Length: 637
Image 1 (spheres, rainbow, N blue to C red):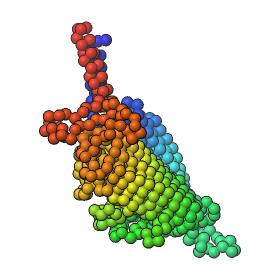
Image 2 (image 1 turned 90 degrees about the vertical axis):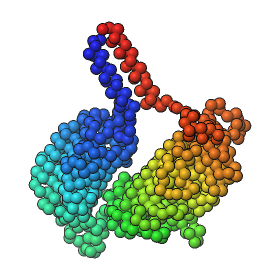
Image 3 (image 1 turned 30 degrees about the vertical axis):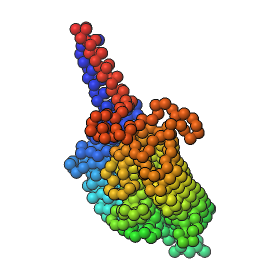
Image 4 (image 1 turned 60 degrees about the vertical axis):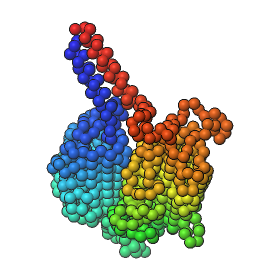
């Protein structure tokens, strides 16, 4: 091995060590673990692990065929420093997928040039003066289930310069000042089931090109384009049919013309579709993205029904004022019906995403509802005092929320019912909150009050929320099991317990920080905070470390029991030496810093424990290897 090769190897090892040792939010390579950041060229499948804010011209550059950029619901945000900035730039790479990514504040969201057989799906894009998605001389690609909005001008989706045989399906496009879908010198593209409304310069515009066809689209303004079913688009933006076919003898022409074609299609009667503001009285399945500018999206009108979103979007467009504490407009509103299921639906831009509501005065609870596999985000606002939440349960019992993503929901107000929680539970009992991802909400991730009891909150990931992760806020929130959750990186406590007889087991509660905008007992950045009337709280085998305030805090005079917990700092709490079953505590499990040493640590006399993470360990190995190779090279010179 020659000296030049040795030097290049050392340089490569040093570079790799740098990449591994400095991982931040970005798109993490599936093979190498490289953290691709702003302006980087991606050469492998990668998955976002956080929000990425860029001042570079390009957010990410595609550098290889056959790769996938998986946004995982995170955002890629640009700046106004470059007039031709692009979120995703792909010049010539084929078979590329970009999915589940929010792209904002670039002039072009996703740009493909001379690329083929690509897939762009389930992204949310707001852009500047260019285009949300631009296919330049790119063919045989699929553009599906994207939401594109709020362009200053330009185009939602632009197909130009011989972009051919592309399929645009189930996209929602509202550019405000631009064109929705525009083709220029491009042929034989197909548009299906898109909702293209409110675009000032035209919804679907064919400036030049031949053989561009479509069906079942919703729009109002077209140029040089008609759907195959009739004039302009099959459906108007009001949710009614534009078709003007001749009527059969006993058919009411007005009824047929005004019957909605886009919405939630009845599973019983194929002629019935529930649209914006309708009361759903039988099970139905979405057949399009549905945009509802006012009122509720859909209201539940019968027991025992299922609303199957099939991955489509229910969009309120703008939440509105959402003032006061009444019944604010909601994507799905259930005023008291039992055995209702809401599945696979994305709900955004309402005051509440989903609101299940029993009787406050009558005490008539809602029973056995299920919300599963839904994406509930960007509901509510912070204009004034609100009671808006992502998923809101009021007097609901024996119901289940599972496998949902609940994030970026907003609200305002310091009261216990104040808005901005991801999941809000008011009263009720025996509910199962399981395996949800609840993050980046204005207030808490999961919040209970008003004597809510006997709930199971388990296996949830609760991160980045503004007033703690999981809050059993009410002094009568009791007898619940909180287990196997991850509560980290929240502002405020990871888990707050305000009521009696609750059990916390096997939770990971780390890195919760000060800085909450709320200033009360439930905003202190402890790992676990046991307060108010939380008598007989039990803590078992929780991992509670690296929080800004003491890891476990218990209010004086409360009875708090526990064993096998991992923690560093505490106040008014210490693990029992024996478990409650009589088994001896596992030696070395506790990481306790005695109360009297806390001040010493603050003065710098005592250092906190240091754990070697996999990244640090890898970095150490690489550095050692580099020195070994360097020594080898010295001996051979």
